[in-house]
Length: 494
Ligand code: SF4
Image 1 (spheres, rainbow, N blue to C red):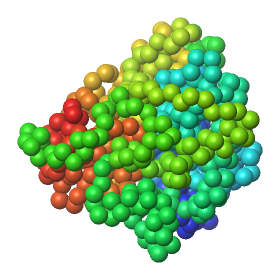
Image 2 (cartoon, protein in one colour):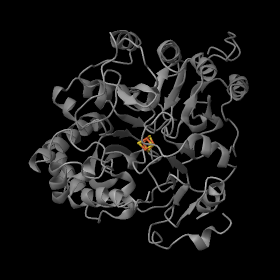
Image 3 (cartoon, rainbow, N blue to C red):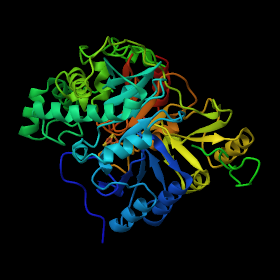
Image 4 (cartoon, rainbow, N blue to C red):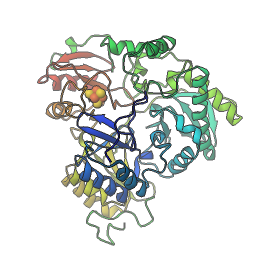
């Protein structure tokens, strides 16, 4: 039986059971909470990609996996294989298992949160883009999620759409607190009479009278949609450790030049990268936050404050004094990384988040893997003597394991030919234009939707049909395909 067509409701997020009709064929997204999976699980995904897809696996900005061009895949077989590998534990909740976690941290309650989420029938009603985050305390994932747990000394702050409302819980209370926050979101949304599952693609201009009316009631969203329409767009490892890639037991084993003039000062008021003060609940929703319109909590009127108050009431806690702290700059873990227990991890960048069959085969030989929200991969819990051979194996497969890679901080949406909305082959153009550089992350997109945009300040390179528009928190400009590389390089530096 062929895979059913795309879902017809407003919540357009693809899943493993409900596929998206991309231009290159049906697309499946496999949720991987925390980005954590085993080599055996990746083997199953690779086999599915080889058998029914285009042989590649894509990484998303939530560290999920995507299979493309599944033209003749029987949906029952696809689901059965994923279910058998433990990658489809719930059919009712598969679209809402959206959990990011600090990739290098061990001991985060990713599994318990996933299980508790799937065991709560009413939370199947969450929008497909509602995002939970479990942060190590480094702040690398907490501030781009709807609700997040951020350890602070002996207690844990529950963060709402990047805002600290002063809610603190004990470490053992993190999972119930995050679920309470999700319920509070649903209750607040119902109280504000926002239709369930609506507007999961908020960058779209209003397509119906109903949507326009809704936008009129929610000015923040209306502003985003209108701006888009007007083209005014900003932008455990076991004790033994993992085996070496050759599987040997023992050793490794077991285990634009003119850019400044061409940029306007229209975005100059936006804040600098890497040190952005976190918003407090009463802060105005400003342009700097527009890039996170995907926050479902943020779409509610006074969202973070109201959802925090409801959550605190459910937990029987009082809100304390919010803390304003700086948002840390995030760097992809790359190369050999020492871990606190004396083991090491090896981090690699996946150029433009697309894994080939050869790369998948190498990665699948690892015992455990962690995919990152920055479209990278980490092999954790390695014995130190295994690290070098892994580095060589990953590099040999074409993954980037050395600092200073030209792909550091560079991502792209699907673009042509995979996406019918795309105005350009953004991946090919990014490949041609990307040189080694430092500064802000760069995200290439084929249209105003801006799929997969990173959570923090970044340079957005958006196809216009004749070239690209480049926007950063500091500047903006346009360039032809041949000149855009220089513009991007200058924009990264601020
Ligand atoms: S940003 Fe536009 S072109 Fe890129 S994947 Fe999304 S809809 Fe397609």
